[in-house]
Image (cartoon, rainbow, N blue to C red; front, side, top):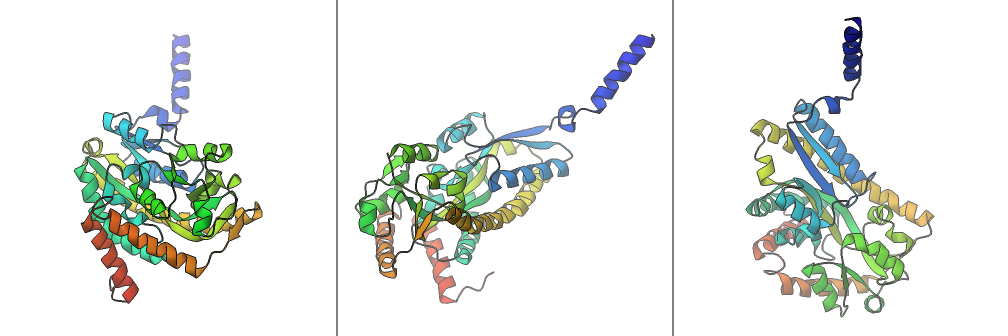
Length: 340
């Protein structure tokens, strides 16, 4: 009897000291994948968001994240989401825009001039984006930001002629980037994001586009240490979930996810911007050279941008979404915008 009592006592002590996550599994466990690497500002913020959701739902809702592309690229993640292997993911704009083409409209090259313009455009367009995702059985939880992206290359590429002589990367299945580069008489080499670094290493490409922080996280700068010091465009993404998966949640728990996401992903945008600002000094310390271009060259690139817009509007994205974006920027730039 003494032995049995002792055994039960030891078992109770063992169970008492088990981690809480082993004692109680969430009723709703969502598997979320991302291309963002472990330790990045994006993954760290998502973990903070997930922990707070679990706390606010008394452990009933949890998230398991698979970072660093271990679930594949955007296409692979989306396929797994559709069949239930994943419940959601952090998608790049180029990847998820194959499903919701209107989502790529903010990626028009040489469009935004400031963070203020980005913020205004995102605020105006996000309700429309939500509708578009819902039509595809997806729930847009939050938008993410990569930031202003720059041209990284193995030698200075500050003129159109320089770019024409380069082996330039374009994201796979990105009609907007491809159309713009084609107008510059550049035939890009289409690759998924996970393939870019190895392609820079082998010389398949020598020019790619990324944010300053992203180039460090993904190590692209090590093979492309020259940066054209004028933003090429704006990159962003989305945290989306399968609408069927979250339909199992109560309205209260869904509201917790939405409210907590609004808090953390709004903070994440500011963290990302700070990381990009700090990355300039880091890159310079690593020997990266920032090469200025001229106002005349930028003006020419903006003309090609306008030509590209006329070609792709109604095709790469809808006329409605473009008109909303254009009107938002026109009002803001003219000083007629009165909405904060």
